Length: 414
Ligand code: GLV
Ligand code: MN
Ligand code: MN
Image (cartoon, rainbow, N blue to C red; front, side, top):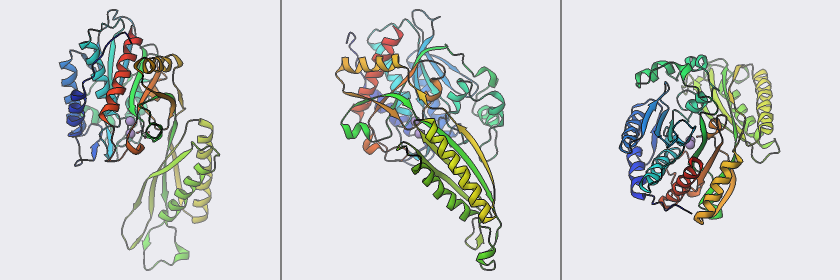
């Protein structure tokens, strides 16, 4: 490897600690909902860190942040890296944040080594990769790729009924939504560093995964309306219980995933809310949100169709009315072979064993792949655990991931 880079474990650890302290739930859990107080504090911290590095900052109308190190030929499309810092309720401190802090340290290390990129290098912080507030994942990167247009952005509301437009303005982000979209060709390449969120690397004893494909997620929202009533007075045969219809549907969701024949199909009913929510009242309404995925679109879509059919049948039999909304059904992304190859070459040069693998979680890279050649670098996380307070990544693995990222950015920007 031509260039010697020193990755600062101390800087990475301090950044992870400081960002984890920006949380709406007590440690070790982390909760950072987009545009909430903790998210805004963490963003302010990162802006400060980018300024310390002398990066040029821009924020778009959604709060996607772009921090640029101008290259020797600044008119050329830049090479970008980054991830998200929003965190689902009671999750950990590494999901997304490692990719942001890691990109920051990769740029710092390249600066310290005296590297002068030909193409500009840019750190990206994406707004709302998690669907927590607006029900749709990868909000910022989806809008950058033009998959979510101004009208759809204006229609988004949070569970309290507040519009995205109002909330982003209150968070200090302004400008027209139609200026968010980027042209294909805006970037020369995008590389995202992320914890694996699965058990493969740890089980194989490997420090690095190189992602070749990203699973295709789909999300459904199902509203069920039955009939409420007195838990003592209404006889069983007269009931139209919305919860029981939902319970049967949740089991059908599990069955639909198991029945596709693909071991990669997974389906989860992660939200199940009932009304009125009193122990002595029959549930009159229920809202379910269902997440279905596969690395291939076909089995995923097969499971979606099976869930629809089961919903019709169950609701018909139980005399419960339903409204089924498909919030998103994204195609899977294939990573760019040349960017994958660049990462593999860097790993081999650094003597780091690596495995080419798929991502079962989705990432902003799913949408960046529509804009430019994209690939991802995975590092192990303990027990494959993620979206939990006990999520953990070893600092040595993070430093190795950052080293691979920095060398890859150097190659791609040369
Ligand atoms: C991202 O957090 C996902 O749900 O895959
Ligand atoms: Mn996540
Ligand atoms: Mn993530």
